[in-house]
Image (tube, rainbow, N blue to C red; front, side, top):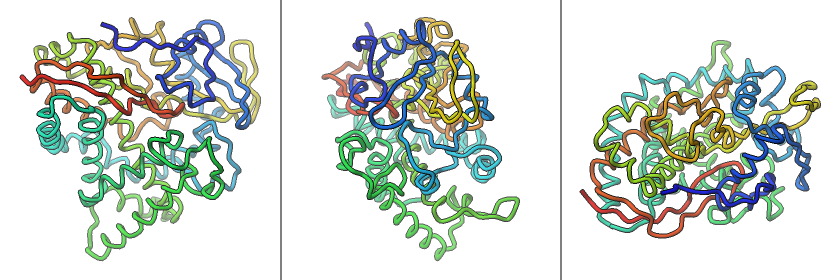
Length: 419
């Protein structure tokens, strides 16, 4: 059975969030990869942009930080320099500034440190599946996919469990700020100038910052120096500490990105199990798939649909000239379906190797800080799920986010039969 077939007419408007409500417009990406791999889009909402859709071009340009800078923002939306400075995280900086921040927290997300969380993750999966699976029919995004990264977030940043649903709700409002199911302040449907100095131009940024400030005050009073938030506040090798604004933005990024990417990878993997029954059998009978399955599930999901870069000088590609100052969108969603790199890219092959997917932003200095955690969470969740069920099927249509930046299944009704 087919997991999912894109229905766009091959000429979707990539600047429109509505073009993504039925999932990424992969027919459009396929046409562009073949006929127009460096394509210009005029945009009513701001300055136009270039779209890069071939895997090899994305990989090369993502690594060419001298020409393609992150220090003007990572989304297609325009912003003044004042707004950029107020909202930026270390994702939106270039070397050496990026590395100064990254190095402070890299150890907390390193492979050996993350490996130490495996039993915690397995225990959480047991709790989550014990609650969800007996329901028989339920929304797998809400009852399973949303739960694991939310609860792990609390372990990593040291927040009380009772605060986690509120934190995730605010993180959703930030990163899915174009979907009315997640926020009342829909970015492209209302005047959001009142929040233009807040992360993601959202009032949720202000609320999350107040929470972070109170949390750190409580931790300081208790002498609590555990967790990644304490690390980010420590002086760097040059003795400098991050500013209040930088800490606010880092916390907001941690809450939003730390939840959404893994949530939507898990949801996409469950969707695949519903439509490719052989996957469940492979998970149950072949232990070797756990070396490759997490990356294939994450390739299939591609939660970050694109990242923007800004050209620092003129650049020639495919007979066209990208001018200094132009916005360039690297469409990871397209690269991950490039059939010159991936055989049968619209099938989930949990034995796929090599798997040169781009979901973590590979090839550049901004490669995802949480990639080891995402892989581990995906692996353990599917190990525990496969052990407990005999069958899983769709129980209704799934729904995608209204967003051309974050790709994910926000609603996934399923029916399960326990083993």
